[in-house]
Image (cartoon, rainbow, N blue to C red; front, side):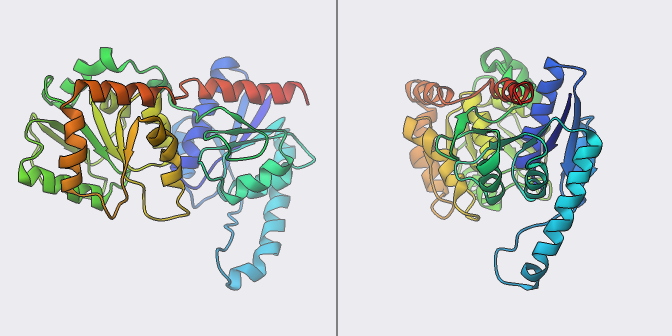
Length: 355
């Protein structure tokens, strides 16, 4: 069986595709998996690092405003579709599974009428590529109810380390890993691989005014940002971390952006959270967080309003209340999809068998 995955550009499109690939291999080690991407995306590094074959296709980003690129779009798109279609035939693809982004547009259009298509949408508000692909896809999967017509609620495929995480049993090991106090309540702060200047600034203010003295903090400041405070048994600053499972195990509360993968991981692990959505794009981060907030598993505050005062007045009282922490953790976990990778893999195999 030959399965082609289209998920390139950003980690939000690539990571679910690779997690699905891992699950497909667990179910059927003989399955052949190829990932489509472009030379300009993160997939150039991420896909080979996970042991999968990457095939490059032309990047055809859709212009968001009138420009010279709009004039040449039809020619570039036709060329990309033709090259991708030839590639699918060369690979003898049995199915194309798309995760959105500009890699998926030519993949969906090339596969139409040639092989079945499965579309996976991670965000509450579907992007253009998946809205197009869902119109003629054999099957559609979503993470937030109502994202796409005909979609089956599945969630986002996660890494096995996150799916299988037992926070309670891993807590002591995790805190030892970060060198922080095993007794104090722990706050995990992160703003993605590049970090967040705003989140960093607010935590810096809290550390300076002493409001976090009774707590431990694991702070992922970002790869290009500098530490403002020295590491201690109460403060662990890191530029980058590839063991997020241990960070989740160590934490009692999280302050983070609300990307689809972040929301999926935090609900799968049942962590109380304050979401501070990234103030760009089409507002999808705020929408991603809404179901968790409505269920009582998270707080939501805008980037503009997030401040040291908000941390002191709204977050720290929760950390001081075992009842509130437990209630939020239970509400968050109720929305988690720990078996999303297996569910999506079953859907893909079912489409191939029945087409």
